[in-house]
Image 1 (cartoon, protein in one colour):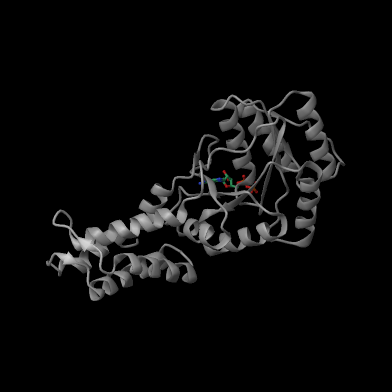
Image 2: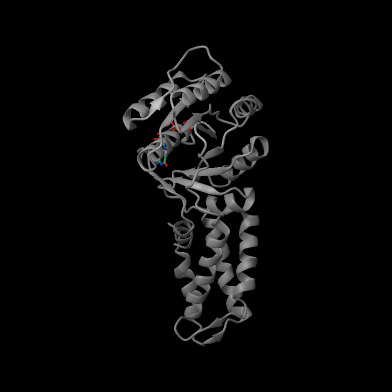
Length: 297
Ligand code: GDP
């Protein structure tokens, strides 16, 4: 497993007993450890470099008080800087779903956890926020995916749009909008089709759906364990269809969460939620402090 960054940094500073200001040499030694730890946590190289520079600026000459060791001081600077880089504006869990019925578009690659996340979000909105929620699967190529959403809907007590064979994704989206309006729903979640790779057909279909319903939120679901790939997927989806937020799934796995740091830095898009398991209650609002703690170890 990974060596803990906090321990590594303390190790560097154990040799230094002096108090006072952090010298350039002290900081340089610590930054080497930060750099290796971030790369091991799957943070991309450019983001790691940028981060190390930021810490260097803050740490050089920073005064070390008697109450903490130089190691603790650097750990604090690294921790604070991680949070600053991860943090978006406002509450990441607060979706813009006033003005009912509010359309929310769920996009992402097949296998990223999109359908599960749609159900998790529906459950959260209905149970915690008391919203009336409708879900619809637009995955016309995979009847099994449509059924999966219907089964999840039954499990969590959330309505799904009845399946009508032969309709296009746009047809289904329009039908969802109509049913949400007539049925007095607060929000309708559209689970778009996933593909194994990003392709033009997928993007064109998602664009057509987006144009048909003008979603209030477009949430991209990506597998948090895929690290740099997740960031590339996000950059492409955002460039083509524009996303308003990211959901990182499988954050219950072994990964160190470095994708989160790269995601925010590269795409500029806020991470809104994290998936922490297969069950429909395993969705949490993104918490920069927790992820920073995890990257630090
Ligand atoms: P989709 O093809 O993107 O719709 O993916 P699914 O929602 O069908 O999910 C694929 C698999 O990943 C399923 O077995 C899910 O139970 C699992 N999964 C989804 N989200 C998470 C998560 O946050 N953690 C874990 N451990 N598994 C997840």
